[in-house]
Length: 243
Image 1 (cartoon, helix red, strand yellow):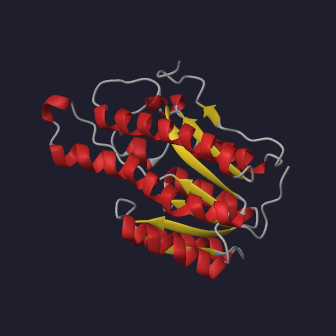
Image 2 (cartoon, one colour):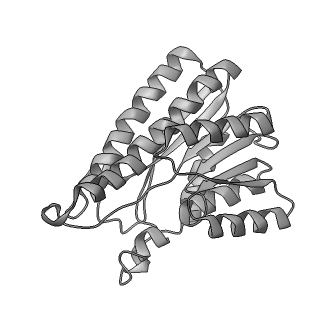
């Protein structure tokens, strides 16, 4: 397996939940991690926690919907680390409402955060990875990218769109630079604030810990250069939205 020590990574939505679990796994592997989020207090706390263990963790206050701020964040990582080796697009939101009661502003918030945001990050990162001849982009998807359910219209639209973009980026990387990996991670229900804040009565026995999904990300990043993982599915045994 490829050793990740001394590489640099940018994780969006990294202050809590799955993003925090991925940030911890990367930091424990010796990766210098820039953690981006809009939740500043949680962001600072996580970076302090990781630095207390000897890891390199730098906070970035970032709204992924803003292309200019995304460009600045990517340049900051490149300037400070010398390269950006790993990008993990994990930032996501949802508004769980029937379409009948959904406002245009709420729909736009979900789609711009979950789809436009990761596209912004990929646009700012991919060409730089081509220049350096290597890198890996991981986009966190969802079972909603393959199957819909009620009260999740914008979320399913954003995740299915991101899956299509990820597949296209994978194909272009195969053409442009074989040193670049592009992986979509289809994750089922997790016991994270993303679920529990919206559905406090959810049966946690049917959810998986985010650390399991973080381990799946680490596997994708650790495959030797002669192979590449375009997509992985990781779901709890009781996942109701698969297949």
